[in-house]
Length: 159
Image 1 (cartoon, one colour):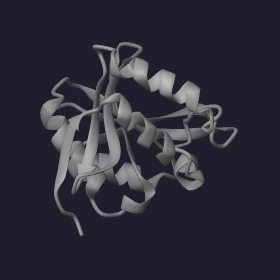
Image 2 (cartoon, helix red, strand yellow):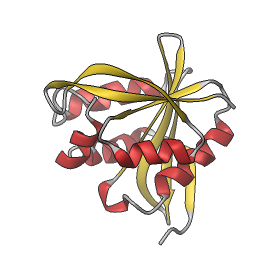
Image 3 (cartoon, one colour):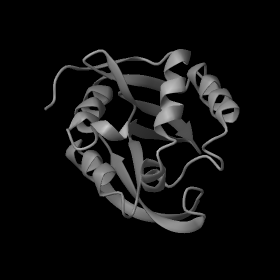
Image 4 (cartoon, helix red, strand yellow):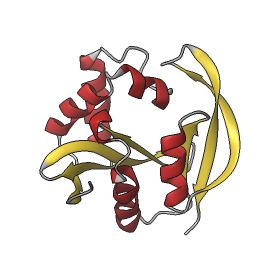
């Protein structure tokens, strides 16, 4: 059952948790567009520590009952504002991502904002839709986690 969910700005110590979450094979597969080598902790920590200090990035840690369970992040790529989220697998299916993303969208007000989900990542698609994102198209991209080009759905939130 869903209990107390909070967001707080991410700190370097959180990145160790996020690294552990993305080592899960199923989670990595569903996320699809992941690091070339998810086990390379040095590369992961470097990349995300850099992002923490990037002023265009808003990285928030999702905390449930004082446990760090995930992250939601706004970043900018190709002049577009994007959002991404990751929940540790034991916490899937409890509505945490949806509630956290809704809370995040109250803090992060830049619009339009886009989200992407692999064609078969129904959990992430549902989270985006429940937060008011509308599917506007598809893109193809190389998914490291699958070593293949796959289709992803593109979502947009205007307000």
